[in-house]
Length: 356
Image (cartoon, rainbow, N blue to C red):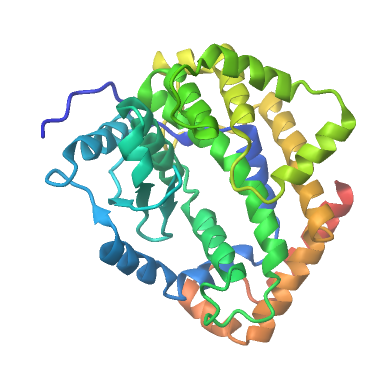
C-alpha cells in the first residue's frame, strides 16, 4: 500500500519536546547505584525472547499484507519522527491500550479494541506515542517495569530474583513511567500535526468511544482537576496515582494544552528544534523545572521505600548476594564499576540525598 508523503522532523532529538518531569525522573533513577546493571541483568533472563515468541504465537504481526491501513499509519508516524518503524503486533484484549516492550529489539503491541473501535487518526496517535517511547529510549526502564509487574503477579515466578526489593523498585519505576508518558504525548502531537487529535484520544481513553463527547468540555474538566485547591483531594489524588503506569487522562490533556499554548509546538513545527547529537546543555529555566519534578520523584520513593539511599543499598545488597558481579563486569564490558566504585557511587548518592 503506498504511503502518503508527510512532513518530517529530520533527526529530531527528544530533547526538543521532552517534559521536565521525564528528565527529572530519569536523572533520579540514574542516581540509584547499580540500577542500570540490575536492568541489564533483567535483559539476560530471556524474558524478551519469551515475549516475542508469545507475540508470534498468540498475536497478529501487521505489515503491508496484514491490516495494511494500520501498518501505513505506523510507517507514517515513524517517518514523521525520522525513525525506523518497529515490528507491530495486534493482540486480542478487552481493554483499549498499547505497549512497547523490549530492551534490545522493541516491538509495539496494540490491543484489538483500539484498532476496531477508534477513528484512524486516534489509532495513529497511539502508534506515534509508542514510537515516542522508542525514540526517547524509554524501552529499557519500561521493559523492566513490565517484568517487575509480572513478577509481582507471579507470572514469572520461576525467574531467580529472590531477595530483590521488587516492590520498592516497582513503585520508583511507576513514578518514572508516569513522567515518561508526558513526553510521548508530545511526540504524538508532533507526529499527527494536530493537538486536538491527541486530546480527543485521551478523552476517549478515559470515557470510551461514545458519541457526543466534546473535547472543549474535557479540557475544562482537566483545568478543574489540575487547579483543585483542596489539600485532602490532592492527597487522595496522590494515593490513587501511586500504582498507575500512566497519569490521569485529564492531567495529560492539561499538560499538553499548556505545552501547546507555550508556543513550543509551533516552534518545533517551524523547524527550530534540537537535532540528535547536537543536544545543548539545558537552560536554567529547564533546570529549575527538573529540580521541581525531581523533588516529587524522591518524595514518592521516600514515602514508599524509605528513600533513594535505602533502595540503592537494597539493590547493591541483592546484586552482591546473587553472587556474580564478576560475570556482570565481563558481560557489560569495560567501564562498568567494580565493587569499590559501587561503594563510592552509593556514598555519592547518600551525599546527594542529604543535600536534597
